[in-house]
Length: 507
Image (cartoon, rainbow, N blue to C red):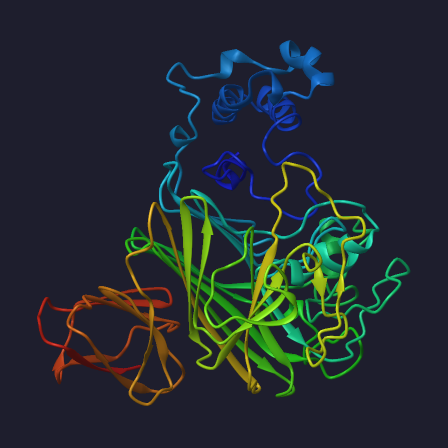
């Protein structure tokens, strides 16, 4: 029950997960199944969710051919007298992690009100042939869908599903392009399509006989491992999750093509700051070859607004557009999302979309020639699916073996977000982060100490990525003790002063 409640967005849509055949708008199928479970378990929370579905869709909450069973399956006695049929009444923690150690699925919202910021994140292992290769995938909703899943379930063995929808290229995750990479999961894959995504293990059929059988094939045999949870913590001020995505890709420990792998380490962390209503996405990637390009992906319903556009293929409304701008804006009705690229500093953006590029895949893993294919054969146009018409690809023009991304996402309704996220660096440039209006974030590296200068407006510094509390913090050469340490985040409260601040931090 808690999973379903938290997976329901403020617009009464269930956040999709893998091959979604039934309606994600909660009509037809959902209520009948939950009625049976509620009647069997006697769970009053389920009964309240069923009442919510009743008020939302009426008789359409049951598929028309199943409505004869409503008097048998529904048990009105379970419904508490105080039930209102409101999703907000079904409150629970605003951030909950489900399937810890397995699917590692996070649902996060700023509140239970209709105007809440809603974020989903998945970084788990592979389980079934209806799953997707989406370790590190996230979505973001505020008033409207701003960051969306680009996969719509259509023809099971069609090119759209096999070569696009189940793959990482359709998700808001990371591609690591290795030119000429061999991807040949089984006989249904007629062509070699190597977009740079994660290993494909169970695309069209699985024979997982038991939990133990799955466990036995996690790190050997079928190698179903994809992502490990490293950190998760949530407070009233922030939610932080860090995952190791290395196993999802052909890596130095296991490469399905029997070569040396394309990555040594892939980590993704999300930090959502409640008061600022800003999401920071931080990625650290170590490749086995400096020529392998890492791409940061984000899918949207409409084309992002970006300056300095240069058309590479097609035209500005249907093609591939390039920009060296560090900013873009997604506008969806009264909602908007400001995107700020803090790292890499020399980033290029490609906007890919329009009728003939909606499902575009660079099949050879090489952008030297933009000669990919629009994988639209077998795609679905069901009205309850969101149609992501564009995707943004962010990458460094000069990749190295150590590649870093730090992207700030600022959602808002009825006007632009008031905070501009700026890049922030320590004095030695080894630690980096984001400078916001009254807060700053530093993603600490492994050096023993560093110094950083902050403007007077900053009242709070988050030091992210250290398992231990810093040994000493000096503010203008004086010891600072207003420190809160939880898991891998140290929150440093700074005095209310009009003077700029100089901090020295010893780890």
